[in-house]
Structures are given as C-alpha cells and as structure tokens.
Image: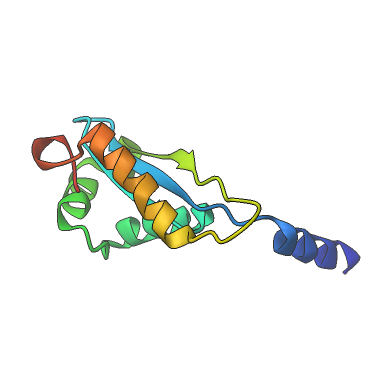
Length: 113
C-alpha cells in the first residue's frame, strides 16, 4: 500500500509539459502538427485514432488505410516556461505551434493540417 501512495505522489509531482508534436505517416511522409498543454495527452490522440473517432478526417482515413504501425508520434519542442513575471502559456504555445507549421508546411499533399 505504501508503494501505491508513493507512485501517486510521484505522479502528482511530475511537471506537466506543454509542447508541439507531429504525427508522421512513414508510408507517404505526410505530417500532422499539433500542440498540447500536456504532452502526456498524446496517448489520448492515439486512442481516438485507434477508435476511429479523430476529428481530423484525412488523418483518420489514412490511419485506417495504412494502420497504426505506419504512424510515428514525436514531440518536436517542449515549451520553455518563463520563471518570473506573467507568462501566457496558451498564447506562447500557439506561437510555438505556428513556428513549426511554418517550418514544416504540413498542408495539402504534404500533410493533414
């Protein structure tokens, strides 16, 4: 029982990281770029694709066509939080996502955005 309490406490103390991620189709090179305030929630994105309920229709169609083994999830960059003063995490995360969208251009034939 003590070990269970220890693990719960460790989970609570683990810092939540916001960041930008990509889902890459290794068969055709297409990308989806997104952001999340908690990088641990990527398991939820994968789950929605596995269940066939993802809101991105093109990504879902190709997930169904190629299968889960054709896709790789990768954190592109973790948001560095400012230690002092006001920090608007949501706004800064959006700017970081825009940077990666501009860099990778995952639109049209190149991606799912």
